Amino acid sequence: MSIPRSIRQTSTICARCLRQYGIRSYSTSAGRNPPPPPPPPSGAARLSNRRLLSIHGQDAAKFLQGLITANVRPESRTGFYTAFLNAQGKVLNDAFVYPTLGSKWHDANTASDELGYLLEVDGEQAETLLKHLKRHKLRSKLKLRLLEEGELSVWSVWKEDERWTAHTKAEDGSGAIGMTDSRAPGMGQRILLPSQNSKDDLQEFLDGVPEAPMTAYTLRRYLKGVAEGQVEIPREESLPMNCNIDIMGGIDFKKGCYVGQELTIRTHHTGVVRRRILPVVLHDHAQAPPERVEYVPDAFDEVLEKDADIRRDDKRKRPTGKFLAGIGNVGLAMCRLEQMSDLKVSGEASSFDGGDRFIVQSSDGRELGIKAVVPDWLRGKIREPKIQKRVG
Image (cartoon, rainbow, N blue to C red; front, side, top):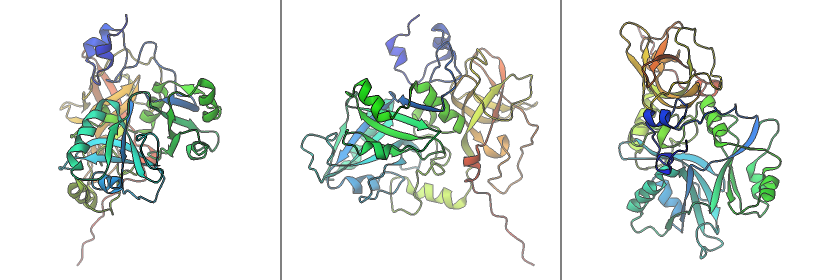
């Protein structure tokens, strides 16, 4: 049975619709039947769920500097990861910023020495972000534009068996723009490619890396614990530290003022972030949880709804987190660190024990086991509380 376009284009799909159209998944970003295979060690996935915004003009750098969490350096041509916040310090959008100079992707009248930026954001939220930018534009000398779908395509490329960078390939005059995705080790490169490229041109640019479905990229993110877009980072609901944007290099805590800075800096200096997004693995409730997050295609046939409560498996069944998204038996969840992991972040007594079990309920009422795992790259960057020594 084909899925109506009106349902395919929604960012949230209810469990009843998932079952009706034969979709099997644990997430609102549904995985089709049969389940996708594990991601290949090397691949290039086109990210059709991403859109691009253009900002260019003499005030472009200053304008962005006052709105995003990363530091904008006008002299730099290196792309970076960042976030837009509201006045209360909650995340509006996560984004990648690609610096350009006289790029034809802004408009035909762009001068060769005019600084500009392309913002890569969640496609469902691109128009909303554009309205946010326009509200702050005031008299700034710059132009804003949402690129049409098909002008540039967004790709994620990973090649784990050898060194390969998009920067080198993007300087060959092909019109492509590249940057390193440094949110977590092994995330590879992000590349903006002219959509009119032929298959032969595409393969030449990708240097032999085979094309992969977008589910391969999504699975790689889930296995590494990297959230992206406003399904997984709900708009105006979480602080950037809850979503690991600080650990993924998206915040410069030494830069000047920007929207939402006050609470962000205060939270950073207190060092107490009790909730963070972690990768999770689902398992049979009757069996012991696995030691690590590993994707097993076709492991279950249940559907988990977004924001399903994760509870401790005891008499009280207290909530300890929220399920965000997933494919098959792996996904992401917002977890209370001292309840679902061995991390100590507050200096208070942790309630976690290695033998603790956690459960989540599927849409049909079945209880599934769920376990959060702290990736090594993330564990090494989370600050432990300072122990105050008694004097006298």
